[in-house]
Amino acid sequence: MNTLRLESLRGYTNQTTDVLDRWTPDNPQTDVPRASRQRNSASQTAMRAISSRLIEDGSYLRLKIITLGYTLPVSWVQRFGNRSLRLYISGQNLFTLTSYSGYDPEVSSYNNLGNMGADYGTYPKARTYLMGVKLGF
Image (cartoon, rainbow, N blue to C red; front, side, top):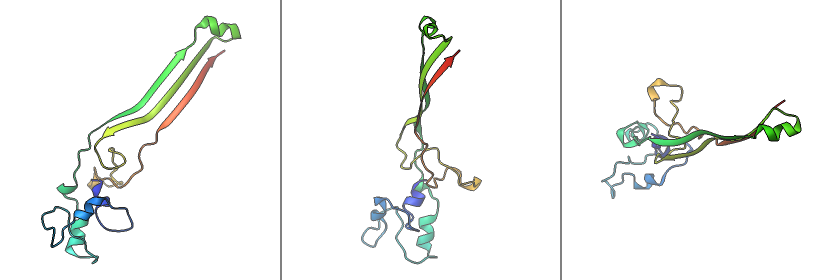
């Protein structure tokens, strides 16, 4: 339900181009509620209401963690007076495949059990890379 924020026409948030297809007398065949400047109007409430119009497919495939490493042969490492040497590279959240319109299909509930599955514009998961050396003496 990322569109709850992106199509509500409230506050100072960016809006999607879908709001251009909102209800007007010339465009009555739409599921996007009409725009209103009145704060307590029925249409403004409708723009903020959670409805089935806002439900999206939240399925996704994500590469969360991958680590590749190589342990050098003992015969090489012993030349330098060490017991072991391992090189590795690791990555987290390298890619996410989804048709979800928000930043992250693992949406937050905004600390409210009544809003489970509602996207409140949380930041996407950080993509991180790590390189390391493990040296045994």
